[in-house]
Amino acid sequence: MEKNKKEPINESAQLEKENPAKTQKIMIIVAAAVLAVAFIVGGVVMAKSYHDVKASYTYEDGTPKPDSPQGMAEGHGESAQVITDKDATKDAEVNDSDAIERIKEFSDEELGIKLADFTSTKEDSTHKLVVSQQAFIIKGEKYVQVDAAEIKKNKDEKFSITMIMKYYISFDGKTVLKEDPADPGNYQELT
Image (cartoon, rainbow, N blue to C red):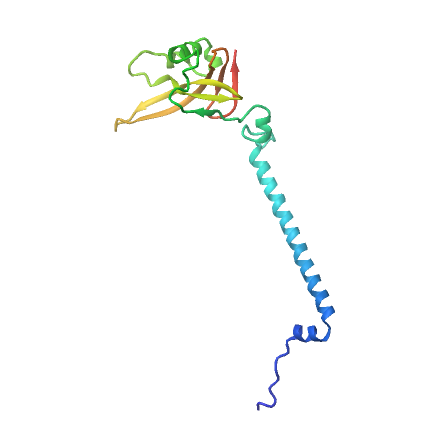
């Protein structure tokens, strides 16, 4: 029975022995086909990635989001750089109560808040104007930050703070910017 059993033929080995040049050509064609498929698949993946990135930078109507490259180029989306040094605001002409007084110069409409709620002297008032001891750099200029915040004490004697609006006053007191926490990096100059 063993005489009838045939050895399996390795066709590629046999082809290589018979015609090595033809084998080399076939291998080159196969490699080129694999590379072509890889480029096509890669191109489709890149195109989809580009579309996903573009979609993440724009709203449905096509307008750029503030943190997008185009939004930043238009002056939106540039987050304030924080200076946390303990003497960060010592060079500012406007500090603490001066900063709050500067905010009070604007109308409720300009500020985007009902100012009387934040300037109440009642002990139980939860709305406060809070001046940060940190300095902030926006578009190369230093600012003092004033937060309009809701501050609540819970039953565990811990505080929760909700930012309602942020204001930045330049160190010289001449420029005041408003930033809505819901639209970070979009600074509106108050005049």
